[in-house]
Image (cartoon, rainbow, N blue to C red; front, side, top):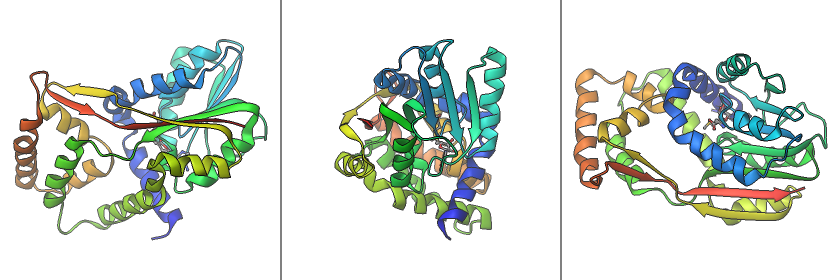
Length: 285
Ligand SMILES: C[S@@+](CC[C@H](N)C(=O)[O-])C[C@H]1O[C@@H](n2cnc3c(N)ncnc32)[C@H](O)[C@@H]1O
């Protein structure tokens, strides 16, 4: 499978999750977007570009900062997610926010045209991380800033346990679609995961021409009061939902039972606490 095919397969997966994206992902991506926008220090009246905007979670937060005289553009390759974002803009009657279908690695946007470029867990979905940074540099005005975030180098212990159990229960004879999605997913990980290392990400920012480069790590946490609620979150949308849809009911029950048995000992009195390592990057043109 080549990169173009892999991108297409994964975009379809995002599009398939358009209806459930907000109710499922907001609990995790909303606080991350809030923090991203805080770090971006967006000023009133400025022009902001949100890379891989999805349903516009970070873009709408940026809109609150730019006020009526500013402008926010969200770009994404998944038309289904963009349609949800556009619907939200219509409902809010917001005129100074737009959403366009475009790849962050090849943007049909003028050079030197934005004060801020932001990206909430989106650079990590690009097969061309370095090219996307080069494009962000091109469209920023001199003195403008790029601020983005994605997973850091360490996996949280819950994910380690989850992955160990899950990998043993995956469908043995996947459909063509599931097989292709697995392949595309692992190709994407191969392309970007070295940038989980802050030093590799900083080197890439330097190579793209950015100055005043900074990397930092934070550990936000989410509490799922029941292990089942965490599993519902993990199994809604994306590759895992597709994987589950191809399992028979007995296999699905067995997987859930094993996951509950393995994750229960990691629960505290508050529930299952997911402490995620996040890498934050920021730099100036
Ligand atoms: C994990 S989601 C995050 C979405 C959004 N930023 C949020 O906070 O909810 C990653 C997004 O990146 C988009 N994406 C992947 N590759 C892209 C590319 N080359 N150009 C633009 N968007 C891309 C996906 O379609 C998806 O919407």
